[in-house]
Structures are given as C-alpha cells and as structure tokens.
Length: 343
Image 1 (cartoon, rainbow, N blue to C red):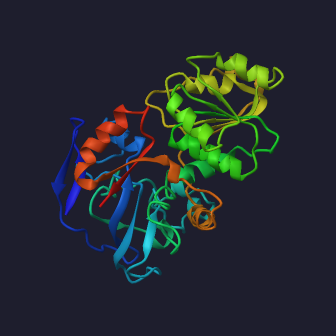
Image 2 (cartoon, rainbow, N blue to C red):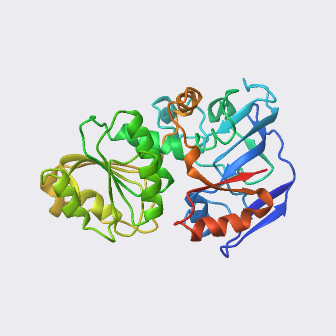
C-alpha cells in the first residue's frame, strides 16, 4: 500500500508499505477514505516533536471503514468511523478521570510514533475507545474533523468556563481557533473577539458568523481595541490558539484580572511567564494537549445539524498529490484552512 512518511532531513515521500495486521484483540484495520493535513504534521516533519519516530506514516486526522478487527472490538466490519487523534485505553488512572491525552498506555501515537492515516490502511489500537461510528446521514467529510481539531475546539471552549455575557478573545483564526469559536457559539457566547493577522481567515469567521468583533494586529492596536470593548478591564476569557512568537504574551496582557487563559496552542519555542509583572492579575492558565473524550457527543451534534465544520475544507486533493498538498498547506495560509485528502 502507499504511505506518506517523513525523513530526518525534513523531507516527505510516498513509499510502499505492507498492509498492517491485527496485533492485539482491540485493534482494527481501517481503510482510509479521507484524511487531513494538520499543523502538527508539519511540526513532526520539521523535527519539533521529540517523540515522533522517523519513517512513520504521518497523519492523525482521518476517517475510514473497518475492514478487519480484533475479537474484543464491538464495532462491525464495514462500519464507517472517525478516528480519535489520541489512542487511549479507557482503563488507566488518567483515562478514568477523562484525561485521555495522558493515557498511561497510549497518547498521541497515530502518525507520531506508530503509522498513521496518511496511508491507504492503518492499524488503530484501543478501537473501542478510539473510534466513533459515523451515522448514515453524516458524510465522511462531515465527520473528518471530529477526532482532532473539532475536539480541540470543544475541549478548549469547555475549559474556558464561559458565561454568555463574557467577552471572549480567541487569538488565532486558523482551524483550531475557528473550531473554538464554533463551539463557543454552541455554548451561547455572544461576545467573541477573533484576533488574527490573516484577513482571509477573519473573513471566513465573519461569513460563518463565528466572531462578533475582529481585530487584525497589523491594522489596529490589539490592547487598545480590547480595552475599548471591555470598559478598560480586558477580556473575561482568552483562548490562545495561534502559537506564534508573541501570542502567548498577548494572551495574558489582554486578560482582565481573575480571567481564565486557555492555551491549546503548540509552540516551537519556550514561552516566558513573567510572574512579577502579572502577579496582581490573579490569572488562571489552562494549557496542554486536547483530551479528546467528546467525539461521540460531537458526532451527535453534527448528525442533528447543530454544528458543522464543512466550511473548514478549502481544498480537496487525491492522495497521490499529498506531497504537493503539504507544501500548499504550509505556504498558503491566506488561501487554505484545511485540505481534505481523498483515497
């Protein structure tokens, strides 16, 4: 089968690999139908993810069809499924508390330390927990982002503990930031401020009704605009979804005293937490990788037309063109949100 792998010299290539086999009783073999390229995939290729294993098939955001399963798997051969970006056992200390990102037996495996979804077939461990069945009235593309970027948006929105009257600033209007806004709107938020230097992405947010206010830092002073909107207090909640050089600093500067700052962003460099400067603000920071435990709930919301992430797909390509897709995704942020890769 064809698979996309990465090399230590920061190149990617399509190679032939054997179709994976069942190794454990809770494994499934999935025939991939659609996948997507994620910024985390680029981080792996660029050598920024220490746990990533060279030559591993990339990809952790994908959907497909079960073609083989272990004897303990409850789903059936032929079921269409969305795959969680995290592999988790459901039984360890962290899983029982809902902290599936820190599963003692799993974590971020697919596309990182074991072969992922940028191949024609993939072995998925812990399938009773990692897979979500796709309903008949939901297409594969409708469900494509359930296991990663939509879960991240939902998790981040929940961590923010919002009140509908809160002013909520989202830094970054990429796929994660837009999914945060989508979920905040579902929770009833009506004062969302979206901050990004990319007018294309801000325009998408306006068109989809995901932002009540937008700020482009290249055109307006962010702090001054925030203070105007919030009676000189700052915002009640911040979600930092950009991970750029100065966006962490921005996140705590625009927050009011006693605010919550949620940081789902992945950074390429260490960030500074200047505690003496922010001491009196009494901020609460919530950071880290998504606990993607809500996929079944999100699938129901999509089934019932409560939310939709279809607008994120700005490009669609065939798997044979996935290398070009990686380059386009990396270099065309003013034209591209998400690429759907068809198999």
